[in-house]
Image 1 (cartoon, helix red, strand yellow):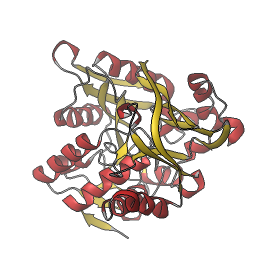
Image 2 (cartoon, helix red, strand yellow):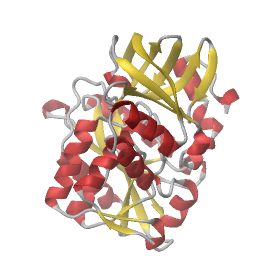
Image 3 (cartoon, one colour):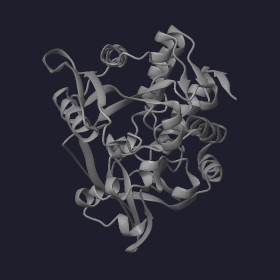
Image 4 (cartoon, helix red, strand yellow):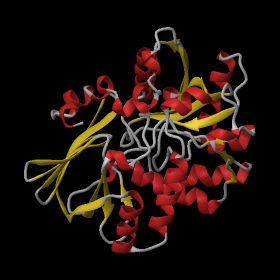
Amino acid sequence: MTKILLDERMMEAAVYGGAVLGGGGGGWIEEGLQIGRLALEVGQPVLVSDDEMADDDLLVTVSLVGAPAAKDKFLKPIHYVRALELLSEKVKTPLKGIHTNENGAGTSVNGWFQAAVTGLPIVDLPCNGRAHPTGTMGSLNLHELPDYVSHQAAAGGKGERYVEMSISSSIEKAASMIRKVSVEAGGLVAVARNPVTVAYARANGAPGGITQAIKVGEALLGSKGEAAIEAVCAALGGRVVIEGEVREFSLETTGGFDVGRVTVGSTEMTFWNEYMTLEQDGKRLGTFPDLIMTLDARTARPIVTAAIEKGQQVAVIHVPAEKLILSSTMRNEGLLKPIENVIGKEIVSYL
């Protein structure tokens, strides 16, 4: 049984470890640190393990949806709280805890601000232990329950682009509408969605995922440069595939996603927000949900796909999926198949 009063050291570790587990997505380090510090200023967020909760306690997922590279995105802490308020108005059963949709620089601390404001605990049971591109991938396979009604709420944007939305529908329809709203809001919205019991989240989510992010972050922040990169690999059971200069980089923001390619030496990676494939000399070395990530070769600072630039010196790491804490959605071929149409490469046959 675990109950932790979160402090700044753990927050920074969660952000940096989350950045690694983001696999190229999951938000920005600076924004994660900002919202994490604000949460600690306004209250005392508490992290609890799932065994601290009753099986029938209701959890709500909080997330960010959109394209990290979108130029017109505008998101403030009030949007996080507003999305939770909108969802609470829709759901009559009291919410007992908050959990994030995934790990990432911004997403590992999803819910910390809401927890500090409301007093609800953060449950160490993310919907996925790594970042993923689609909302359905972070929805605990609820789309396969024929009678499940997805309640989702979103808020974000500024001025004429400010948007609030509450929707009740199928998982796929609701996720699609939230994605469209993120585009209308300028690229990014705060979301509260999909109340489920602790028992269901435990069976389909990633118990201990936030604790893992904190441990990875402690390994990264405990050393410098190459030693920090090696410490991260040791913590996750991964390896450095290549260190070198980014020779080619392309990114297009379309439909609320960042899509592109990165080439380092003879190594090519494709991404759909997160890195999807890793190939060297034409040989496939890694395939989502494996963790593929870029770090600054000199400072070990994690670099998300939206921040890659030609000429950067990077280290590319790879961690096999079996070394990660992953949700049931990462074994669902129906959710992984659409990746192929986006990046133009096979995914399912490599699982």
